Amino acid sequence: MQTPPPRARRLLLTVDAPSLLHRNHHARAHTDLRDRTGRPAWALHGMLRQILEAIDQFAPDALLFGLDDRATSVREGLYPGYKAGRAVKDATLVEQLERAAALLDALGFRTVTPPGLEADDVNASAAAWAGREGWDCVIVTSDRDSFANISAHTRVLRVIDGGIGGSPLLDERRLRTMYGVDAARYLEFAALRGDASDNLPGVAGIGEKTAPVLLDLMGSMQAVWSDIEHCDGENLVATVDSWCAETGARRMGGTLLKRLTAPGARERYDFNVSIMAGQTELELGLTPDVPGSPGLLPLERSRVSRVVDFLGVGATTDLALRVLTEPPASEG
Image 1 (tube, rainbow, N blue to C red):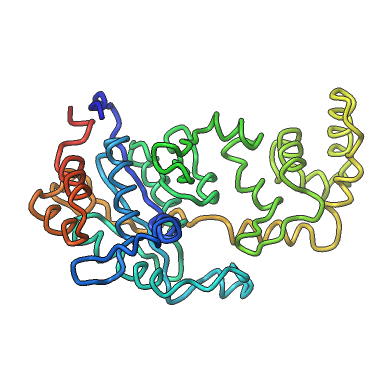
Image 2 (tube, helix red, strand yellow):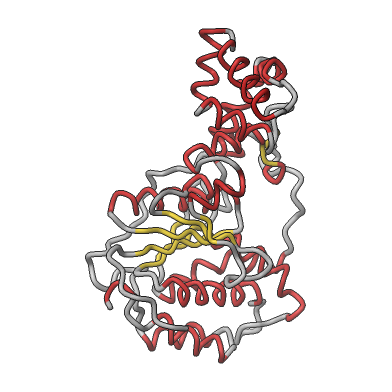
């Protein structure tokens, strides 16, 4: 890969480790890859391989890995049905999830497992940290929740079946094209729509097509609720019906108002926001001005060689040595 040009702003690459492990477990289980002690390693190797490919693509200055607290969950405490219905994890996946932090820490990366929280919260805090520190940020994940963190300086690489090279890199413009909402309104959009994968129903009757129209016309859900509270939704109905007349769509202002004022609708929306919102003030332990701090690149060559070679795939060791032990683009 051609060396990227020097950058004015440093780059933090933030990785949702559990999402990559889950994807690689299902994609690579047929290989039955084992480490040098015979333990299952296909998900760990697949995750690491994708991380290396992402580093090769973006040439970050630092890496941060978010992991889920597998012992306790604040969200499950608030909502026992959170993520209910998901299939029970395979024992070999669970083992590799539990070993991930040790592997990443051994390499010299920075990992964060927030008590009672998830990798999504680390992603949100990383984006906030980058904004405060004048860095850019790329979040690597397969989870749509991180779309709420997209901004002028934060993008999301959503890992899909095509791997790192075939995955979409979402910025503010592309997110708007895909969903019809501004990045700053994505959380509101998601709370209206709900999230079946987390067992979070949305506001009944308002889905992926209607929610963007509502947010685009009214500006925000704060404006929607304020209009309902103070004007009985008159502005909402007039604005939506005017848009319908201009576009030739069927009038739906009254229908939207009825759905938004149905019993429990506001409570459902507010609850979804509280569950879906990522924590932005986690202590990440990043000290970029201290040379050799965990997470900063480049890494020490002998350490990389020793740790990656333990997985027993020579080509991956070679790739790791190339992309982890060279200075990042911002130092060019």
